Length: 273
Image (cartoon, rainbow, N blue to C red; front, side, top):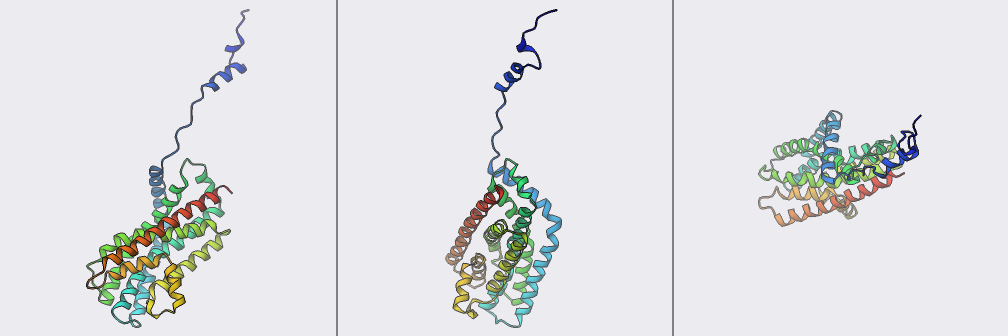
């Protein structure tokens, strides 16, 4: 019988403790932009089938509103407000209303726990989902704007401004929708808040501001989508004042940054509960 040292036995405590001293370090946390791209692609593929029918609903809703308003408003500034407001309404329907419902259901079903276990920054989750939902608004917004210009006889020369209006207004409204969905204690309340926000974008964005009472105008100035509507509407004139257009877009972008930051904070708050 041979004597074997205890430190080389497979079941010994020393044999177990020795590899533990050389345990491999954990990998670095995922960076923001690669994580954001991964979440964006995942959300885009997930929502492609479920959200496309709702995008058609949002587009037809905005087109129907413009047809109804055609016999009510006059040409000129009022027509410009209706077309711009109806176009941005497509963004509000998807980025605000649907995103509030999505995050409300995600929080209620425990889906936030899945994202919390991944080495993904909270900002990547919020920005990826917001970007994916806002991307679905592009075709509907363009179709609505072209149809409105033809319907009201407005020029099509400056429709390229939608390249700036859609992402900036989409960021502001998506951040607001995500924050409402994450802060609402129940998914039903998140759905209600999202629909109320979309209704506010409808009433305060589509109707001409000149016909509103002063109190309603003040509420209109607090709505993030208002500045996207104003920037788009200013481009229909024969000589647009680009300084005011850029100013409205800057305000819209600032509100987007703030709303997305609030949504990221709300995500962290909801994920740890």
